Image (cartoon, rainbow, N blue to C red; front, side, top):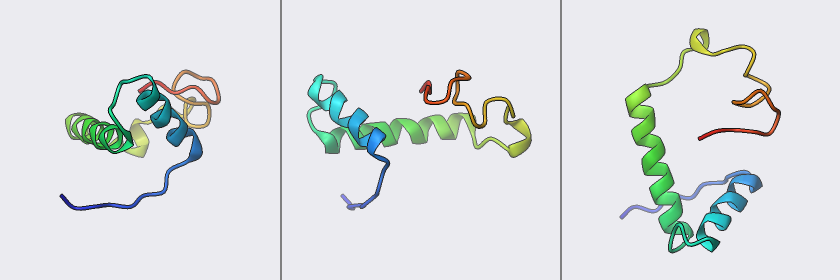
Length: 72
């Protein structure tokens, strides 16, 4: 399997580590592989959003209208 090196924000790393600690995944590698696969499937299904399709009210405030709150 090919190897890929990425740099992610610390808050994402913390969320992944928490999922592994809670037993949702066996290890970080499995978590990242599964989450990336799920994200790619979702992207394929919904397709990329055009800038015209985005809600301008949510652009700077997160998905729920609060600064650091996102729903996946």
